[in-house]
Structures are given as structure tokens and as C-alpha cells.
Amino acid sequence: MNLVFWKKKDGQPKKKKSAVREWLDAAIFAIIAATLIRTFIFEAYTIPTPSMEKTLLVNDFLFVSKVSYGPRIPMTPLSVPFTHHTLPLTKYTKAYSEAVQWKYRRLPGFSEIKRNDVVVFNFPEGDTVALEVQENTVYSDLVRTQGRESVWNSYRVISRPVDKRENYIKRCVGIPGDSLMIRDGIVVVNGVAETPPPDGERFYTVQTRDGGSLNPMRLEELGIDEYNGGNQLNMTPSQAKAVEGLGEAVTGVTPIIDDWGMDVWPHDTANFKYSIDNFGPIYIPKKGATVKLDSASINMYRRIIGVYEGNTLEEKGPNQFFINGQPATTYTFKMDYYWMMGDNRHRSLDSRFWGYVPEDHIVGKAWLIWMSYGQNGIRWSRLFRTIR
Image (cartoon, rainbow, N blue to C red; front, top):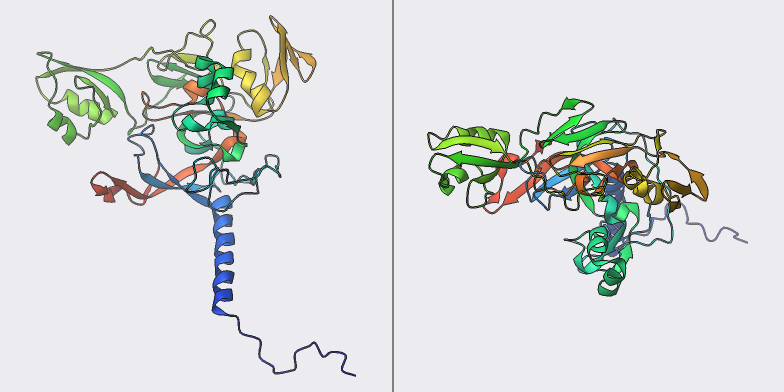
């Protein structure tokens, strides 16, 4: 008896795949390869807001390096390929499942995050969102102004895992262990004042001899496109010098110091009289460091203890804190944290409004602009420019 009748005879040609099968195999391979590249090597990202101008412009398209700081292992692995948190062509349908959740892990990278790196990260306060207003309003701000019950009755409120929160891009101005403050708009780290980003913007007041307004066409020639119809201009340092040298009509150019303190982190005006241009000093938490807890400092570390590091925090009286059911007068950090700020200092919602960025929220380092377009079409001079 032929007991190997199921084997192909020697010399018999293999059955040729159909065209549909070949296309299907190629598509599956392409999806897997692209997903691995996007997850572990680099990912494309688009600048949606002017918070980093003029370093980065709206509609700059970037490559973000995952290998620079080490690729983060997906924490929510069950998701639709090439999506973030919402399915395309839908407003609210989730593109992922939380049936499987992995703890935070990161593969080795080429370097640590350094001061002045431009970094992409998941928005720390994006763990809870009110869907109908998520593009313009932070959930915690809604709760502070409207009350939790009102927010939950008015909007669809959901939670998101760390790696499915909105992507933000800012400049890292403080790393773990730093002491940081802002004085008259200048960041001071460990007692050393920063050199402001050369392409970063802030508002200046321009004094003129007759008190009149500057010529809008002349301002446009200098690349100044944001002004209040008068003599308050949002400019880079080089643009401020150019305006100062316009002629006898200009008698002075002075940086504006904005003392607006509404909603500035840590949202405790009784203990912290901070504003966006005069802030701190604060300590940026470092893994393994220990801080004292009291009625003032708890507001700086409350979210770290209870949300980012997953403890239960109870307050049973003045300076009486219980962490995981045990009385506590100090806290030791489990992760490193960073301080992120936009280069457009008076037009950026950044760490001054929502605090520290945990290490498990870091996505990667902004690396290269591969495409850019504006109102007049492609900005050819920006193509393939590295980000500094």
C-alpha cells in the first residue's frame, strides 16, 4: 500500500498562488513591517498648533525618532494599525481595546533626554477627556470651573490609557533632579539662566516716537504675523532687534512680562503666587528621590502619587496623609519626570499649566521635517531640515 499518497511526487510543481493571494500576502507583510517601524523606530507627526513657533510651524510634518530615548513597548497592544485613539471617519469610536494592558517598559536607546531637546509625549492630563470638547478644553479645567457633576451630565466622559492619550510636542527645559524657576520670562535651571531658543517667540511692546502703530506691510516683510493691531508684537529675538532698528520712529522694544496667574499649575493660589512669566522655584522629581509632604507640597505631588504612580492617597486632616493606607510624611518617586515648555512662550499650554511629564509618557525625539506647507503652498526651505 502507498502510505505516503499525500506527499507530492518528485518533480511535481508547486501550486501557483492566485493574484488575490499574492496581493493579500504582500499587504499583510507591509502592515506588519510598517507597524514595527512605527512602533520601534520612527513615526510621522504633524504640528497642529503654533505653540512651538517659529522653531516649528503649523503644518510641519515631522519624523519622530523612537530609538533616540529607547522605543516604548506598547502598553495597549490591541489596536487598529496606523491609528491612535479614534477610528478614522468617526468622532468618538475607540481604535483600541483595553482587554490587554502591559506595564511600562522601554528598550535601551541611544541617549537620555537632555535639556533643550524637542520631545513628543503623551499629554499627562489626557487620562480623562470630555469627548465633545476634547480639542479645546482640558477635563480638569472643566471640573474646576463647572464642577464634576455638571461636566459628567453635560458631556461624554471617558478615560484613556497612557499610550493612547493625545500627542504633544514641546521643548524639555528641565530634567529629573533640576531646580527650575522662571523670572521675567527667562527659565533659570539650577541657578543658570537659559539662552532663549533663537526661533522662539514672546510678546514685546514697541514704543514709537509719536505713539502710532507700525506699518503692517513692513512687519510682514520681517516675518512678524501676530500683533494686536497696535504695538504689541509676538517676535523672535532677531525680529525684535530688526524692529528696534527700523528708524527714528521706534524708540524702544521691551519684552512683556505677563503676570496672568489664572489656572497656572499647581492651581493653589493660597500657597503659590505663580504666573506664566514668574514661576517657581520648583523641584523636578527624580526616580528614587524623597520629598517631604505638607499642606503646600502635596498639591505639587498629588497627581504623581495618585495617578502617575498608581497609589491611593487620602488626606484626613491638615498635614495628615495616608498612602496605600499607611501614614506618610514623605514620598519616594518611582519614575523620572520632566518639565516641558513651548518655544512660543506666551502662546503655549505647557507644564506651567499642567505640571510634570512622567517618563512613561515619553514617545520620542523630534528629528526631521520631511514636509511643510502654508497658505502659499509648500515651504521648500523647510524640507528635510533637522530640528534643533
